[in-house]
Amino acid sequence: MKVLVVGATGQVGSEVVRALVARGIAVRAFVRADSKYTHLRDLDGVEVSFGDLLDPETIPPAVAGVDAIIATANSVSPRRRRDFGRVETVGYPALVAAAAEEGIDRLVYLSTVPMGEADATLPLSQHHRAVEATIQASGLPFTIMRFCAFSDVWLALPGSTLPQRGMSPTLFDRPFRFVRIYRALTGRTVDRFGRMVIVGSPEHRTAFITVRDAAAFLVAALDHEATRDAIFEIGGPEALSWGEVGDMYADLLGRPVKITSLPPGIFRVLGRLLAPIAPASANILMLNYAGAVADMTVTGNELAAELGLGPLERVEIFLKERAAIEA
Ligand SMILES: NC(=O)c1ccc[n+]([C@@H]2O[C@H](COP(=O)([O-])OP(=O)(O)OC[C@H]3O[C@@H](n4cnc5c(N)ncnc54)[C@H](OP(=O)(O)O)[C@@H]3O)[C@@H](O)[C@H]2O)c1
Image (cartoon, rainbow, N blue to C red; front, side, top):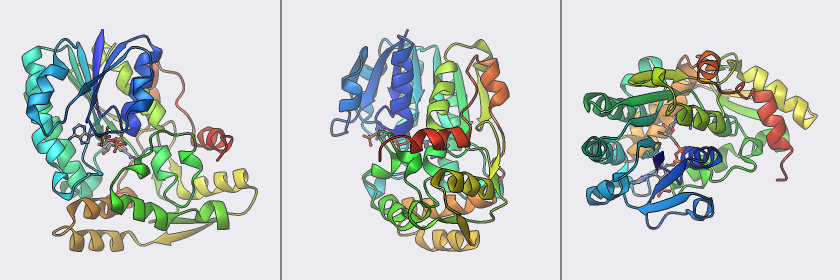
């Protein structure tokens, strides 16, 4: 089997490539010519196909001869302001058309769980739902996996670098200035001062899932007939409150961790104000609002067992593992 990974240089795509290689599956990585991809080039069995979802002519050669596609590419952190949303509205229709022309056996797409009432207005969700609709209408065998918040990202945002240790590449390194500034502002308040800064209530629960587990789900979808033409909503092994996460940080750091809670409404208002001039940045603000109010407590334990995956990584274990990695 040969699998084309679209988004291979991203944080999830890179894990997908590693997981495929570990299983001895041939990989073709779809890579933009000016992307950082040396970490992929050195893996056994990985072939690089240069292209760009916004350059439709580059897509059919990348799809030629593959059996399946795992697509994680997105424009959440665009290089250029005008590209926000275009990967989803222009790139994915071209990819899906090329895949249909090639007659591939499976298209697996990484999406997000619906975010309650915020889903209808959050650009990120709108983009995902548009791609999902394009895929569903194509007649291609597909699997859509809608994930909850990633541990590697969302557990860092309240002010810690631990969840990102040893991770390559990280979302926060992407050339999108707003995310870098946002990350710098959220900083290291947990690590340095025992202060966790969250959006919304400390009681709000989320079923955080690691990027590695998400990649394992995406790869497992290739093997199982039960995943054909199906949409799944997948979280980690348990839905934790921020208060519980704070206790875990306190145990790890050996000091009390206090929580400062910011009102979610501010993020929604700022997002709406910024939307006309900086839609990608506004999306990040609105996403913070949505994450604080939406129900993202669905766990992935049953599906993991059905797909033959091991136990999903609990946050406590994940944080301990990352803390053990040299900073
Ligand atoms: N963060 C979370 O908690 C979370 C939870 C659930 C679902 N999700 C979803 O997961 C996805 C994020 O995945 P990620 O973290 O792996 O993203 P990422 O690290 O930002 O990677 C984005 C990938 O898309 C590629 N890409 C962007 N524009 C492209 C184009 N025009 N042509 C070809 N490739 C292009 C990038 O390539 P370059 O390297 O060339 O830029 C990169 O490989 C998003 O769709 C998000 O909504 C995230």
